[in-house]
Image 1 (tube, rainbow, N blue to C red):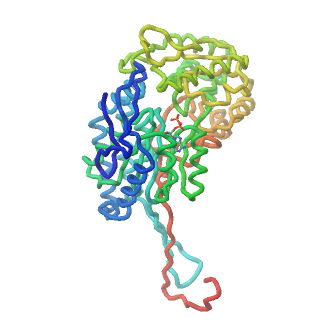
Image 2: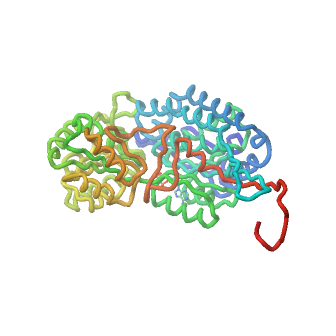
Image 3: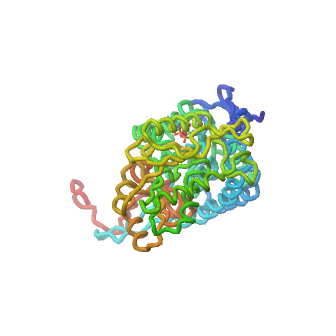
Length: 492
Ligand code: ADP
């Protein structure tokens, strides 16, 4: 068993309670690490360290270019340690080594991109309608940012927040998921090596009610950036509202993956599989509703079944494995519960629907790739996020019906459209109510392209130039260059 402490003011520190909790390897189902169990006192210590680092010390004295350079150095260190960090996430999270190596090799780009953006944050000079004044704006960092992350892609999702927050000049306190805290604690050691002043980045590990809530409510925290379930996002939004804190919320999805009869069906089948079985369906962007046009419904379903049946399950550390375990025991139970719900609702089970008992799955939390057909969009299995390898197939007639079904859900995170008709591609991209539309591809992301949700899928955008604004606030400065002060009781 490995022990992990909190990370406050640039060094490992024990929790105030001296208590810890276990982190499990989903492939073996056994605990492998002990994580410090933080509480409100630890949160207070970490937030004060971040606040001190924000208001005094070397961090606010750095030029924006110097901040950018630190982010570049950090990116280089992540690149150096990518394999080690990837292996750690596989052990703690059960994600495939093939996926994690690619992900960690890509993560440095966020630090390079936002590092480059740090010294391009500009205000503007405003040509006022009033004579005798010079008016300009400053873009200033919000202050201490609480970063709360889920268990499905701990380092990548933290990076989407850390890079723009630090580029903006904020300081941060991170609370990783209690299920997967180890990689974040290992990663933050690199900040010291890169040369970040102590207190700029802090980590408090623990549970939502014991660490997350006091962090959101702490008076010195000015911004909460959260990725996780919509249920928790709703609570956080309410807590943050009490103190008028800015929030960025990246929540769940029930994304439609829509295949028209004119699509390249080979590509569409691949896209359907990558939409739902990659990462064992544990992604907010999972294409969990597969909308098939009537004419190709049966053929595409058969091809999909044939491909899904070949999916290799097993040890996520093996480069050959295609579907790994479910990350947590509660999530495993939730997937099983949704399969029962779908059966009771009258959906037709075509594949899977049960825990995987193949020998290569050992005692891990594996669930068979599961496909339901004959799903109606009003069923719970089509409306609620399962966050597992469970696909619902829904039939549609034409474009209008595809749009009606796609949008008839309270989420709006992502979508896929498979068609060779360019006009249709544009029409669909315009009419689908969600933050990302993929045409003839699925599950593509970049540090350059905005990502976020419509409707209940969240507030704000990550990635791309705009994302830095989530961590900035605007100040307007007025300078009298010769205006008469005039009547003090009348607005100027
Ligand atoms: P997921 O199951 O996708 O991780 P959750 O929304 O349950 O989604 O958890 C996401 C993160 O939010 C985790 O780090 C969790 O500990 C944290 N969290 C849970 N409840 C709260 C809360 N009331 N306030 C702040 N953070 C919370």
